[in-house]
Amino acid sequence: MLFSKLEKKVAFRYLRAKKRGFGSVVSWVSLIGIMLGVATLIVVMSVMGGFHDVLLGRIIGMNGHIVVYHQDGAISDYNYLIDKIKQNKVVMANATSIVPIAEGQVMVTHNGKNSGAMIRGINMADLVAKTNGGARFYGKDLTAIKDGELVVGASLARNLGATIGDEVSIVSANAATPTPFGSMPRIMSYPVKTSFFMGMYEYDSGYVFMPLATAQKYLNIGNAVTHIDVFLRDAENTTSVREALMRLLPDGFVVRDWRDLNRGFVGALQVESNVMFLILMLIVIVAAFNIVSSLVMLVQDKSKDIAVLRTFGVSKKSMIKIFVLSGTTIGVIGAALGTILGTIIAIYVEPIRRFFQWMTGRDLFPAELYYLSELPSRVEFWTVFGIAVIAILLAFLATLYPAWKAANTDPVEVLRNE
Image 1 (spheres, rainbow, N blue to C red):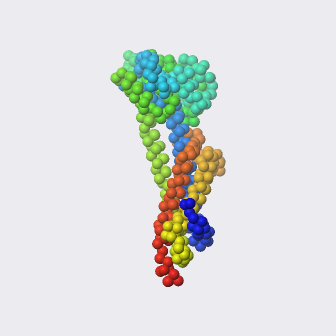
Image 2 (cartoon, helix red, strand yellow):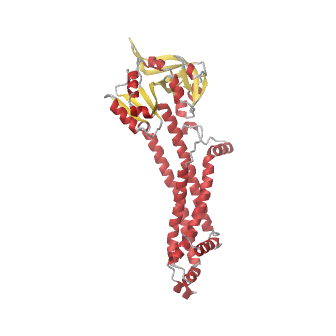
Image 3 (tube, one colour):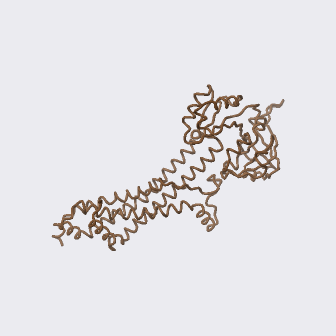
């Protein structure tokens, strides 16, 4: 048995002491500090995890897990290239689809309003598969979109004042038309047949989809594409597929995965998550120092009792166990309450946000700033468990010095002074 009956009885008796034990202000501050620190850590890490999953899921869902480019520009023989890729066993063991894409930067105008955007030519069946469950569409069914018709982001359409059926003009300097007076920007008008809402402001306000053939004509690249997207079953398992493609493809082709394409974003998100964890862990550390203060005062207050116990034959080891159990119990209770509170808040963080937004009358989560229309959260068992264990471990470490001091109390000296 880790703790004897006597050790547990004395430890919990000290905890119940009003002056220096569990009933003291310092002990309550320690417990509440650990509870709030654990709860805050769980909520923040869950929200950060939700941000990571939702944002990467939508970014990767639009751009593919692996992208194949050609350093000289458009890929003219993309059908042959896709057939060649499909013959590779490593790629096909991990890939779910291979999608040709033709895209370019343009300006979209309507009724005197204009906005920068990215046009993306794609087979409509591939667009349906890419956005399955991740976007809402309004207007014409995607499978019925014909050559020369557009699918426009809802925010972009709203900014331009365009509705379903309106024609918008697309202007591109890259696809310029040569004239006797020099190159003129290519300007063409297309009807908006469908709008989409992904819940990610960057895409909703900056993307226009069109059939692949329409994009090829507009970009003046003939029967070519700008890149090929490869979608995988497991987004984390890109290394083997990327290496296989690099060996397979001729010189001049560039293979990049989603980490390369979003390195700045992924890195910033990871750094922010780590920094937030370290900063918020200071709350728990401060609470642990309060446990040290509480136990040191308890040792001083109970020095006579400690001396009597020592004279009755209680060993130094038992004295250490008594005070370790007293302090660690505060940490365990605080961590348990914090885990329950933090988990509940993390699960219902979006309704809580809406409530405070309703109470204050302010937009607490602007989509144009955070790129999402709602506050995401992902509660992971191992993250919650790890935070609780760290809090308990810090509480345990905080008890070691007071426990050592209590064990090394000289009973003869204490009783002589009484």
